[in-house]
Every structure is written in C-alpha cells, then in structure tokens.
Image 1: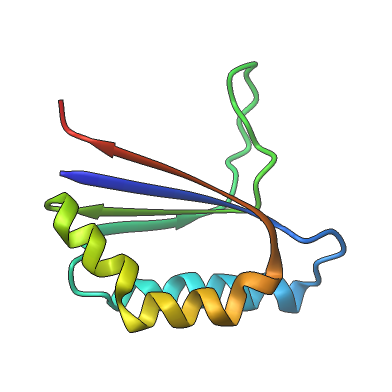
Image 2 (image 1 turned 180 degrees about the vertical axis):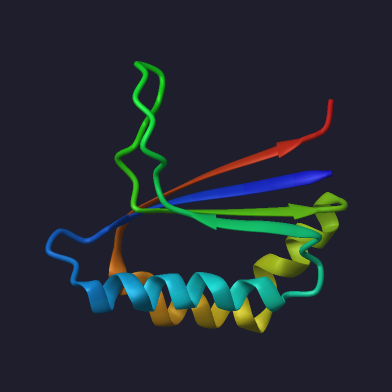
Length: 100
C-alpha cells in the first residue's frame, strides 16, 4: 500500500468561491483510476496539543503500490488540477507512507 496525504493552506483572504474551486479541483482527482481509496476533508473540531488544525483542506489518496502513485502524479487530471488551482494555495505539505 502507498498512502499519499496532502495538506493545503489557502492564500490569505481566500473567498468562499476560492474554497469551492479548490474543493472541486481536489474532487476531480477522485476519478484517477489508480486511486483505490480517497478522502477529502477539512480540520475536525478536535483540540489536543498534538493536533494541527491550521490547514484548510486535506486530500488522502491510497494506492496499491508506489508505481500507481507515480501514474497519478503524471496523470492529465492531476496535472490540470495543479495548473488550475495552484494559485489558490500558499502552502502545500505532502506526507507519503508505505507499509512496514
């Protein structure tokens, strides 16, 4: 299994329309065939010292193997998402993990 978790921080002053556009862009990624499971989220209303709620959106994609994630990275839908939406965020952090 290969887990790809992406956190997005919107640009300061982002509007509701900007948030809707980024959410729609992230949703477009769900049609990429190598993704086995996915989740689009926003911070939960939980408060503990170890929880970072500073991000605006999270995107979790699970693949069967690392090669499937590589296909996703170069997929036209993913490339279009980056092209169409990168102006909406100020920061992106990615955590990739494999089974142990």
